[in-house]
Amino acid sequence: MDTVGKNEKMIREYIQNQLQEDKLYDQMSLKEFIDPFTGEPVEEGKKKKPFKG
Image (tube, rainbow, N blue to C red; front, side, top):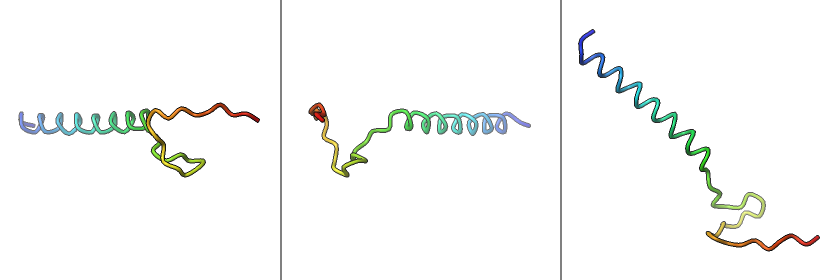
């Protein structure tokens, strides 16, 4: 295998690893833009009132 082939293989592995890390990061930093319970848009910095039952 020549140098070009080795470099190409390393670049492919690097890109694949970066894509996997990006997927993991996206899952960890997933932000809710729509409240799954009410279906309403989530506002930035909105303070929720404490639940009084």
